[in-house]
Structures are given as structure tokens and as C-alpha cells.
Image 1 (cartoon, rainbow, N blue to C red):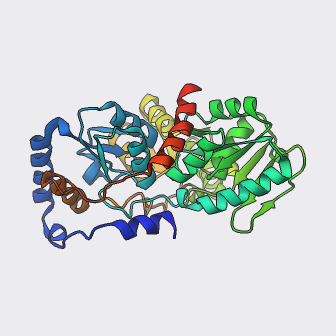
Image 2: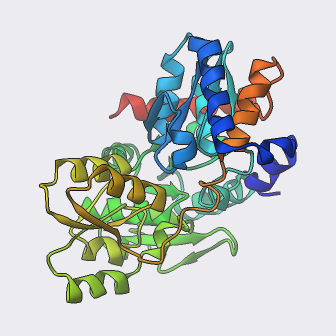
Length: 367
């Protein structure tokens, strides 16, 4: 069973009454509960979330940043994570025993994280070690399940973010000759290429066929897991070329989860934080096409009316699984906490959490 399906099976059913309440009533309840619980409640909101819930966030940011803030907030008994399951798992790994992490909608997941499971990864590791011996260190993007983080931690590796991927690849190459990069091939490829590693020294591992795609020669340095972000793969080279032809003065800014050809053809690429800061620092009147999740692009458009901002893909829509948490689910989760009967608690097995935390801490130590 896939991770998203597993989480869905664990979800309690939201009462129909929540879907019938007005927006004003739901928003009033959020404010009431926040006021009542005070510092006992902490609400982190990921950049990709809907405005209807992120407006109530106590902190906004990327997934790891929010997990760290949650862990540092020792006063909060309840962390209601407006994000997706892997983010809530990371928050549970880093927060204390006295803290409860809640995900308002268990269907909120990440298709990329679901592209690497333990069975596939352990099977691949056995075949890769057989082929290359003890020359490989695993790295995983934080957009992965707790189990994959634990596997990486147990085998001497670390997690990476899109902000620190370059530093972490440099660290990993000081440990071993080769890197197995999970689960997003594009971030791994784009980061390694920026470090001067040619595409000819990278090979893709297909977990569905248990085979390499490409030339797995003796000097391979990057073994890229065949995973991707379904949102960022929808920004294509044709979008870049159309803009170059029709609006050559519009700068193109994309996330490194985009394909290699799109990243190379763009003006700038970087993490969500980098994208936000670049737009904040851009001069008034500047024109931008942004290749990342649509909720964030729309928020940047609304926040910077002095700049001309569009999506790189004019037909783009928000991520289906990232976009699950709505106001009714959010209020339901808060009211259950208010009653002392929290639903959708995220609890990572202690042994998995221990190894996953190793992977996360190795990253903290090296950035």
C-alpha cells in the first residue's frame, strides 16, 4: 500500500456538518480556538497551502524550516501542521514526547515522496552495493517518508533540502565516491551538474524495473532515483521557448525540481525561499515568469502588485495532494483538540524516528 493510501486509511471521517458551515463561521471558530488554547497550540503553514488556512499560520516556510520551528516551540502541546504527511512526520521526529502533531487531512500527501518505499529502496541498495561495492552513500531529499529518511540515516547518509543540496552533495562526496540520490532525480541531477559533474557520469535507477536507465559505467558518480515532482515536471521547455520568443524581457525563475532542460534554459533557479526572496528584492516594474506551485505563485502576484508576475505554465493548477487541507478539515482538527480528542495524530515509530533523526542531524551538522 502506498504511503498516501495508508494515511488515508488511518483518517477519521470528517462530519458532514463542517462542510455546511459558512466561511465566516469557520474562520470565527479558528480565532476562538486559537485565543482559547494560546501558546498550547502552534500552527505551521507550508508555502504551498491554500490562503484559507495559511492566513491562520503562526509561521510560514518550507517543510524542514517549519519542523525546526515546531521543535523549538516547547510551549506548544499541539502542532497542527498545514502541509503534507512527510512534513508532519518530520515535525513528529523533531518535536518532544510531550507534543502532539496533527495533520488536518490525512489525504494531504506528496506524490514524489510516495515514489520511493522501503521495499524498493532496500532491494535497490542490495543490487547497487553488489555492482559498486562499498562506494555509495545515500542522500534523500526531505520530501521523502520517515522510513526512507531512516534508511538513509542507518546507512551513513543524510537528508538535503533544495536550499542546501549543493553543500550536502559536497559533503557526501567527501565520504564516498558515489551518491544514491532519492527520491527526486531532477534536484539531484541539477545540483550535481552545477558542481561540475557531467551528465555522462549520472545514471537513473528505475525502482519499478530494478534496472539502470542509461550507462552504469564504472565511473558513475550520481545514481538518481527515478522520482519526480508532478507539479514541477509540468513546466516544459516549450513554455520557456514561447516566452523567449514573445516576451524576451520577462525573466524566468524556476525551482530545481524542474527538469534539467528547463532549469538550464531559465534565467535563475533556486529553492522556494530563493524564489520568494528574489521576487521581494526585484525592482518595481520587473517582469517574471515563475515555475513552481500555483498557490505560491498567486500569493507572490498578490503580494507584489508593483511587479508583473505570471506562471511559467499558463495552464498550471495547484498540486492536488499539497492542496488537500481546507478550512472545514482545519476547523474539525482544531475543535477535536479543543475537546481533548485529537484526530489524525502523526506518530512515527520510535526505531524509524531514531534513524531518520540521524539523517536530519547529519545535515544540520554540515550546513
